[in-house]
Length: 334
Image (cartoon, rainbow, N blue to C red; front, side, top):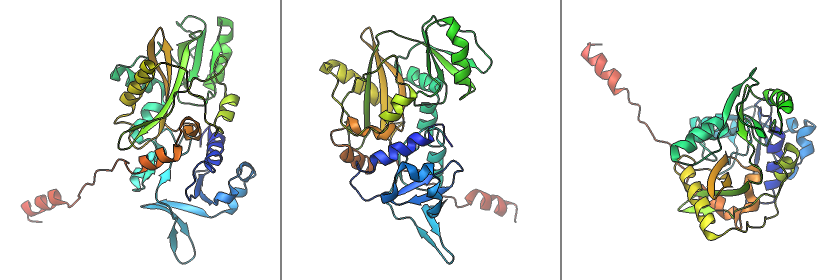
């Protein structure tokens, strides 16, 4: 149940030919029902037409996803799950909590990482705690239309990705419309200054035995990537050209990425979008489940995912033996 529902489908179809390993697809529809989709039928029309409903339903329970028949249940056959749901349910922590609760091994952000990266305000708090710079901001709630940030500025829904509801506002006469559009998607919005000519760099990575970084990309864009451009961006498979930057800046971006990633994002492959303003590195946003898993930024994407799969965080096992209750009962003679 996400504004980015269709983008998740685009990402999943894109990765069909990127991942060379054997795989199955589990589709969570807008009614939060799970369906087992054969890889051979992973086409966009299957979902837009509703034909996916003809495929077997799955039930999520302890240990995995199960197909139910008249006489027995059969577990869907896989080694681990990759969370590829963008936006609500996938990136906000709901799916991560379900996987943890039902003891399912998965690649993706854990609950705390999802919460802090999904909410743009929390992301700024997190970065500030780590000593990482972010642009100044102000928070508006539904019904508020007065800003202190000088024009031009950017309006962003607080809990939404893919540039949905985002506007660059050049003058005050454009502000009300931009805010109304953002409030269509969220009850709160973040206001940031629009920095003309800012340098932007994207860096993805994960941590296995050691950190595995992608190449650094300098996005080629106009004022910002709108929804339509990002929608196409989510279907990218062709490797991008590496940004023409010196080793010193590359090292600073990687060091900032590592500070953000470890240990909160353990088990996930994420992408961080950075600004460089007057030689200083600023965090723009954290993409805990980047479009098409940012495969186009890696020279060996499958190798990075495989390495990550061997170093997933383990949940602490707690022994529940009712010792405390038994001791009370014995003390009371009951």
